[in-house]
Amino acid sequence: MYEPSIVDARGGRIPDTEDPITSQLVDLIVRTGIGGRLPTERNLAEELNVSRTLLRDRLTLLEALGVIQRRSGQGTFVQPLDANRLGNALDIGLQLTDHTTESLQSVRTALERQAAAEAAQRIDRLNVAKMQIAMDVIRESPSNAAVEQADFEFHAALMKASGNSSIVFFADALGVPLRRSFAERRKILERIPHQHELMIELHEAILNAVLAQNPTAAKESVDAHFDRYDAEVAALMLSETQTA
Image 1 (cartoon, rainbow, N blue to C red):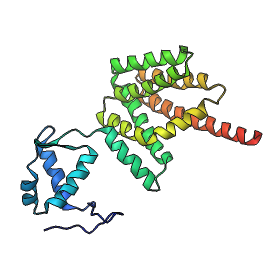
Image 2 (cartoon, one colour):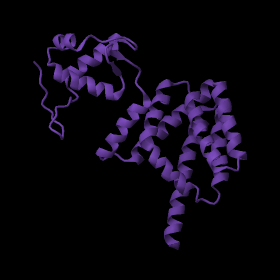
Image 3 (cartoon, rainbow, N blue to C red):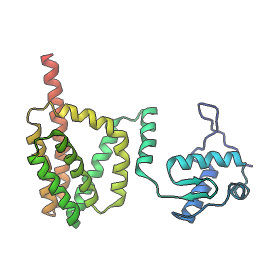
């Protein structure tokens, strides 16, 4: 009967990347498909030749990730992986490792760059229309809260306009560990005197490139969006340091 060698900080055993139990369970989950029911714990333990205690450890891990759901008196069912649950796992991992929010932000930027290029190639009328509505709010609303929400909706619609479900999924997942960073950055951006005009300029460039069906310009406008904000934040921080 298989017993793993990796032990967590509390003394409990956890699966490593070579763990055959988890690998076999993942294969079974894929074969079963979303909505399908897994065999009972007793049958699974016999099939995998492992103890039920060890099996429950793996099922608990997979349930925490959101790929299965155990229903009392009904069994264990396969369910779609939720981006927020994966995001929570990433958030915990980020805080327990040497990965920085800056490194995750670069991944998020790369996803948005690719999303813009794909959005420009296909023109999803519904989500491009949502980008345009958000752009109108950004231009005209006197409310900071409304503009902030419109900013979020603009970028969410851009991701969806790509038509690439993987881009949308991973962008949503990365948004969970980055939410604190976004909130802190927002507070800094609000101190930039011309922040509203800057937001209009950079978002219009992205929208116009998508409408023009120019993938290269769309990617470049996303790069310019993040690069310009980084430069403005750096300049602001330097200015505030010098005047302190």
